[in-house]
Image (tube, rainbow, N blue to C red; front, side, top):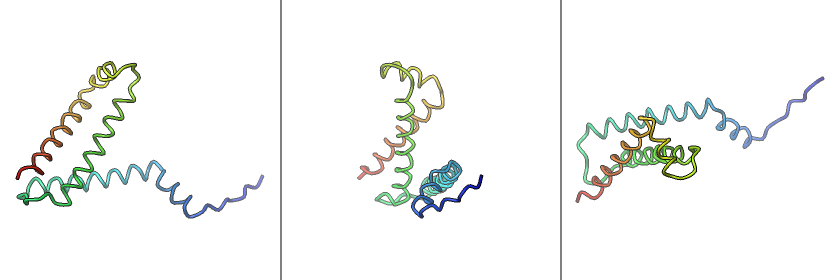
Length: 115
């Protein structure tokens, strides 16, 4: 049996490329490395009066990370929110990540409204 090769449209090729797991892995990895580099620079350099674009990038990265934590919490197989939290909070890393994200939001809020 001879299979005919199907030509994909450009938009389908792009969609397939970005939907591939290896592409998602590398894009997340490179984004995380960029986040770490920017975060290191922000921590080591004296802050300006107004937050820079790098600080807003870090904020958006943490917002995305926090959204993923909330999604994981809501996807737990339990009936009500209290039992979902009980199951979710058994893992120490989930609690630590949630706590770190909240501390970051408080710190960024104080940074923005420090004047």
